[in-house]
Amino acid sequence: MVAAAKKVAVIGASGFAGGELLRFLLAHPGIEVVLAAASSGSGAALADTHPALRGMTKLSLEKVPSPGAWPQLDLVFLCLPHGASRDLVPTLPAEAKVIDLGGDFRLQDAEAFASFYGCEPPPAELQATFVYGLAEVTPAGEIAAARRIANPGCFASACILALAPLLERGLIEARVIIDAKTGSTGSGAKPSASTQHAGRVNSLYAYKSYAHQHLPEIRQALAKLAPGWGEELVMQAHSTPLVRGIFATVYAQLRPGISVAVVDAAFHEYYAAQPFIRLADHRSPNTNWSRGSNFVDIGWVSQGRELTVFASLDNLGKGAAGQAVQNMNLMFGLPQTTGLWHAGGVI
Image (tube, rainbow, N blue to C red; front, top):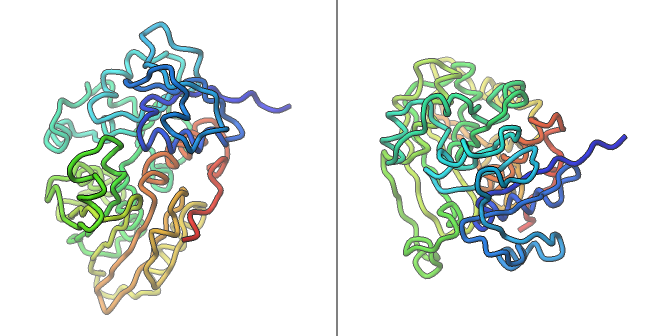
């Protein structure tokens, strides 16, 4: 007997992450999207906002329902600006699970949240109901049992996955420097001087030095793998002319006596059962490999005790919508790969 499709809603459906999420969900064999909503919802066809979805759905882009007016739902996806989910979550149907693609519930430290996000943190009792949803690092059982998931950030996903096997086995020294680059879609659909084509196409610059909101998220996740680790980690974000993609270069020093063969074994054994991690071993990946997919490509090179790790993913895929679908699959008892098992762009 075929199980009934799970009914889901996407809130913040007009943005890049919301549109990408709908692209995955509309092709998912176990899901029925019953609501696509945004503050700009006018009742017009959803395909007018996302023309790539033409022929795939007859849904309209609606306003966010008022409390008590929600349809019957199994899960609600929130693709909202920082600070918006904390107010909406308490008004959602009690029976619906939640996956928040924003940053409101990623950090457990309220002071760090206020400092890096520049807004009031969610109430501690509400934040405590969310599980951090990075399936390759968070125990799968915790995600499967969760009612609410905080979807990781795009930079954070790449950096954590690049470092997790090394920290879990204690292979590197404490001082780590990350040079991370992102495409313009990471800034959202609302245009600004730094994201419009004319200002971005020939431009490369650093931003949010020592202040990027994903830095405490990375430290928090890695400290769980190696208690007390992370304070000496430095991450510098860069804006690039790419439209989509994250490329993180991680510079670390191996502990004395650690060979590259030990590093190789750490990566291959740690990710042996993870379907979306592809290892390039002793070379650099390319952002084209994962574009449009949920894959993460990780490579590494070394010279003596110096180790450089590269991690590449699609900021709208594994960095947002794809990861949210992967978490949803775990929450509903489905294989992680359901609706996600396809390659990225060929070129």
